[in-house]
Length: 228
Image (cartoon, rainbow, N blue to C red; front, top):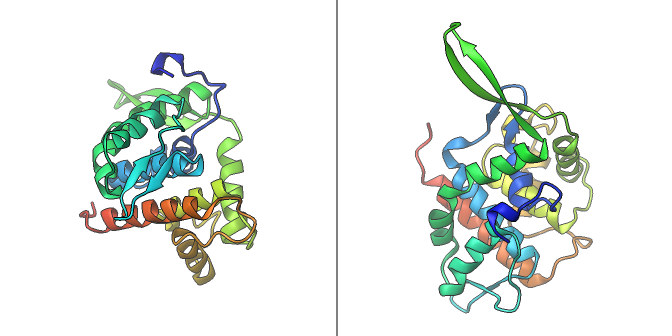
């Protein structure tokens, strides 16, 4: 799949879901901008892992599974990078993350989940801001994460990975209106980061291992960055 062949009717990637969750409709901003590229790259790796397109080596590096080539161009770029040779998760995050924000945001705009709004500043200068697109997809995603973190529901593998990455991003406190920042929520979020998804999350052990490696590498990468 090339960029031009992508259509809004294509199934959303985990990276799109994560960026949509991080979008804050009240302010028109995206939470965690200064660490966003690590988190989005982590979502790409987690998506590939969930689809059985990644494996781990004996040395803990990540490699592509040759017989499982992704059709999505965003996922394929990272898969190709790992097809060259196995690499550490942190290497992949740093290499692939910086180029993800714009194309993933463009997809959300084309889907109608987010829209651009132009306005004048001081009556003279034009400025473009992000606004909610009026679909219910963000609310449904946030509801699924809330059920897991607040209500104790057993997650699907996809929601488990999404909640784990949201926790890894360090932005969960900003969701306090929908997801109270309590000790049980923090504990469950950390469990998901470690791959403790519960019995009903239909994912093989290798998938959980790869995803936990990705999430913890994301946490480690974000931790050493200066906070703005």
